[in-house]
Image (cartoon, rainbow, N blue to C red; front, side):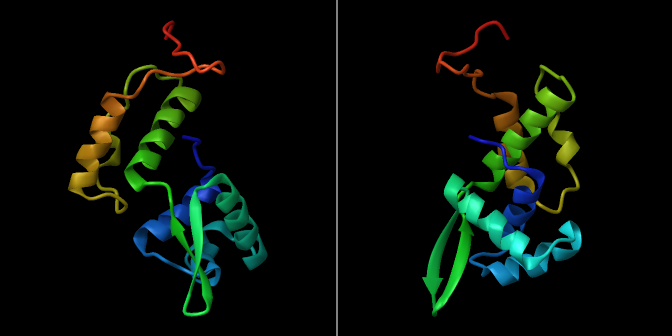
Length: 133
């Protein structure tokens, strides 16, 4: 799974809270956080659509978006990537870092812990598992 950028994650979080949403509704929910124009939101949604992160349908004559990426899987991938690339941690991140989050409930927290503790082996560019890690 490709890890969403920070801005893509902001749009996904808006959709995980409520979906489907129109581009305008998504923009209204992230405008203060991101501080950018409506056209930037539209462009980001188009890129996310191309990457398969969101889907687009027409409902009641309006184009709306839904998250394709699952919340817990995406957050686990994001946390794993952050721990490995940014913090250079080779061990699983403690799930306690998510306690108090408004984004996940207790059940999702338990799923997140499972994913972080049992992260699949890394796969190199050839598709082979990298056993040296």
